[in-house]
Length: 310
Image (cartoon, rainbow, N blue to C red; front, top):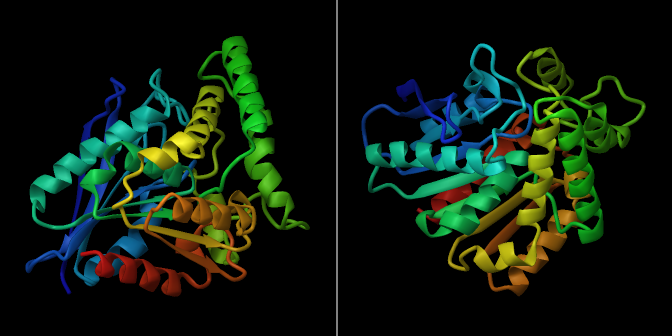
């Protein structure tokens, strides 16, 4: 099947930056549906091209942007890992800008949203605000309910560091508390990113990519902590439309999802509040499912969910 591939850009809602985006779709014929993807922290849209290409050959259009502070959405002189004064909601609003652009091309196609890792937090926030516009949502490599006292302490610490150092400063503490802590679960470590996937070639590709694995600014980490607090709250559960089909997918060796336990707790909470939720945990899989050794299985399961709700 021939594919249409294009690149586009648009003004970020945060102001000075331009947001870079990619779109891949079948060439000719009717598009079965559209999947918009929100990538994770310290990565970028290019990592999702193999999956997007595969899904386009199955008849779906795929759109994904580099978030503010990531990839090609960082201009010369811009700051990687900085989200602007509006914090993580700037990223959510940029995602909606992309959705408006893509919907103009495919006004009659069902529209889905998928987010991975930090992108799953963004997608969860998007679903609470605009879930009525979606045919379904996929939260991949996400987290479960969090300890409220711990989250409050992390927010206070983050606020103090931003006040002390400035929003664009860097501090190693947050990396140690997040990715550094995650990687310890797979010691002895070959790289600092062993927790990402069992596929050593994909780990090496990630490590060698200058647009992956960078530290966020202290305000960027603060913004992620606030975002995580938002999407693990009871209020979030109440705001997500019960009519929205949700797919939770994670590796049962993903430390962000507490090795499956957090994802199961999230699934149980969604079920208890009357939401439509399907949960898949892949034995042995780690964090980045689209680069895992069983990625073909993951691709097929995502496709099956999309097809079921077209």
